[in-house]
Image 1 (cartoon, rainbow, N blue to C red):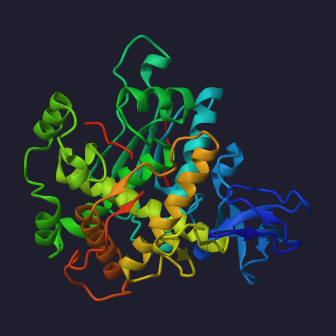
Image 2: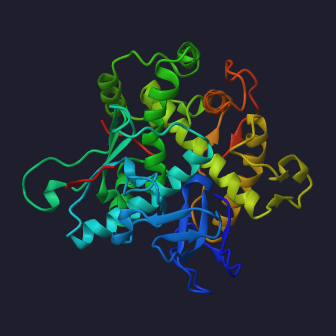
Length: 384
């Protein structure tokens, strides 16, 4: 993600800020330009965004819950912003615990949508397409009563269901340990689940499907039986040679979603590094082999090799910084050549859709392996 600053006073801002801590102005995100803007009230009502003059905006309806800082153009009929209009169901917000968890999920979801918008990906709502992208944020019935099964996080033809218990840090850490996962975050979950949606949109009915099967495997194998076998046998031996995670080895759909999540990890983190002007120059004898200047926009870069060759030095550096603080590696993964070929397929699909490169077979030029999520498990309505 890029850096933001107040257009009125120059104060550096976080993506989640709703008020400038220096000059006190209201702030809002203008989704069309992916920018946090200082605001001025209009006499006739609404707000003028200093980052985009000449237009009038209002806040997303979810701002009343302090759950969204995105803006809606005044001429649009929807009360919800580009991200919130994809919500189909939210939990009972009269519960303070539900409200707190939902706010955390919405913060992660806005970061997801920032990247999807930057990549110019198609984002149909359920009102526009019966299989459009939609979210159900649900609480376990067991938290409010003794009846009902636990809510499972997962995807079904564009509908992403998220158990809001994942927003509880202690609960998420418990699940991470119990499932043997090196990485489990709200943003990671959302990136993984939306990968299933984009498989439907970019691959399922596209000529690239045969290329997908050559690289990821045949998705026509029984999905339920594949997951059952995965949980029965545990991690596949030597899965690191072909997959980004153990769970990715369970079925080609999960392999695609896991790899998709990592692609979004890479482009968003590289953009942050670029925004800070980071360069990696290791002061060791062979440091030039893992040096990098991150001087490009990863969302617009058509050459996957450029992303990958920057990712190795960056992750080596940040992992080393984390270890200096006694923390686990920020990116505890190895990207083998087979995984990079899969990233290449996803990179090609995204850039072909956006028109930044002609369609073609992905994964033909595989960079060297590099060092460095989320998993699908088999309230109140809200929609635009």
